Amino acid sequence: MTTADASPMKILAFDFSSAQRSVAVACGRSHVREVIATAKGHSMEPFAMIESALADANVGRREIECIA
Image (cartoon, rainbow, N blue to C red; front, side, top):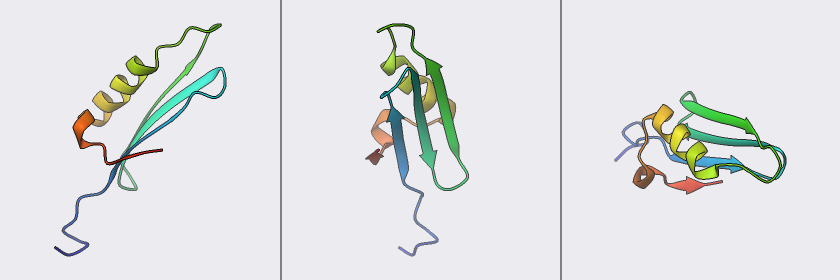
């Protein structure tokens, strides 16, 4: 398989270190979907954010090759 034939790596990235939470799914250089939310107090729904980003990118959980 040549590099041209390879499909781009699918990456799930997230940051929950501050009140502004973000989740992104990257599929190659030009296909990025991101969900950003501001947490109120200690409440946040990280799994809902991840599912939303995956759905926006049309990528299934099992397709993710790297978590950042």
